[in-house]
Length: 228
View 1 (cartoon, helix red, strand yellow):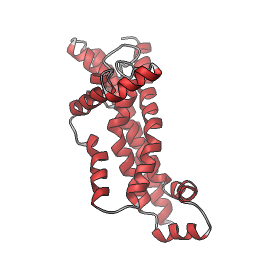
View 2 (cartoon, one colour):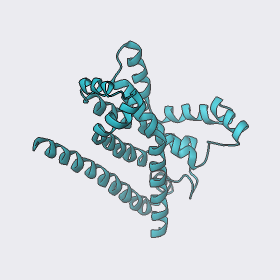
View 3 (cartoon, helix red, strand yellow):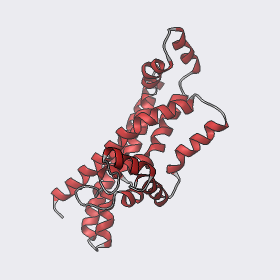
View 4 (cartoon, helix red, strand yellow):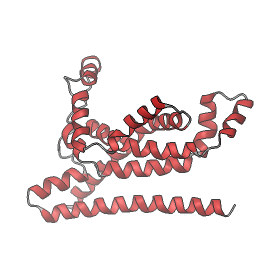
């Protein structure tokens, strides 16, 4: 395998992972903030539904996305008929699959960070005349930023390792949907173990770097807080 092929597959994987993060981050922040400040049985049900992709088999996630996004599905048919957008068997489908499975990790990390903000601080913002949206944007998000960044790194790492949902909705199309995990699978079943290991080494390296950055950042934050 040429170095250029490894680089192309790696850059495509990063492109899909970052695009998935951009897609899921706004929704993840809003859901996390709402869950952190809401209570009740209905809230618990909503939280459980949002966390489902984290525990469902990848094939179940892929089947669900395929049912919804295919031209015969509710969302897929609407987008295709009204906007000419197809979300199956292309890189956009890979982005949606990655966003779907990484969303719970992102949301959970943000939720825990929002929950640590004292409620008294929220009350203070009201006395300054800030709306809930202004308080969220100007106070809550900056204070929860460490947890948000933690969630972003975990979401990217999860997206880089996504396989089951991606291959069901995006297929394995070289140059468009062939991420690292799919490329490793394709070369393994074709008996190209050397190429598979080359790609696996890149995948392991990227994941390790992301997790190391995450741990060093969190450790640095804890050290900074303990010195205050």
